[in-house]
Length: 129
Image (tube, rainbow, N blue to C red; front, side, top):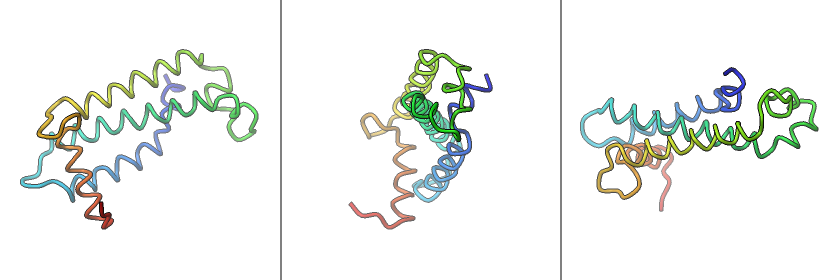
């Protein structure tokens, strides 16, 4: 189980989730919604974790050649590549489903909670477009 957790790069995922929470806070319109924040954090965390695991699966051969990355679960042989790939795809799809379908508002394929987080990020960083 520890090796599967290592595939998800929990420290990087944590940083992304903190940014998502701040974006949600600044983007939410109307009253604060804890359930909305929970769905946004859960879905984003699953997608981030799945993406990190897919990245480690994809780069396992080059990771085996570098001293710094040889101890990761796939290059070290502690996990089978097929199992790591399946794990990554399943949690990525679970995150997609979480963000897409639970309380989808007027935005097709994107829950309104994720739109609130994006709206907040645009406001914080003055992104136009």
